[in-house]
Amino acid sequence: MKGKLIWSIFGAWVGVFVIVVTMFFILGDLLVGEENPTLMGYIFFISAGVVLTGLGVTLIVLTVKTKVERRLKKFLLLTEASFVGFPVFALLHNAVSSLLNTEEAVFFTIATIVCPVGFLVGAIGSIVLRVKKSRTEKKLASSSQ
Image (cartoon, rainbow, N blue to C red):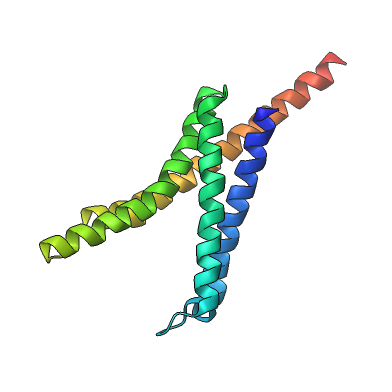
């Protein structure tokens, strides 16, 4: 049961993430505005962040607490760590830049390049492992009949 719950939450989490990214690229000017951010944009991104964070924390807890295949566990945790790492490293970049009064590149590179790549690797790896597992289960079910 918990395995199915993990996949349901993972699917919802990836779905909401894709919707948020799509909305940002399609309706970015409408939501954020070129000079003055709109209230609709604030409400949308804050509520999406709350939903994504809630689903993400739930997914991390379930992944750590339940017995999940070793590779799958690593991919799921990589996906979540990348999601959490993006705002953390962006804030660190801003804090270090303001404290040193200079442009800081390490945390910025981690936030903008490493975290999205880690997210994609973790999400795609998790999906591939799920598809492989379902195919082997179908083969075993058909061969036992």
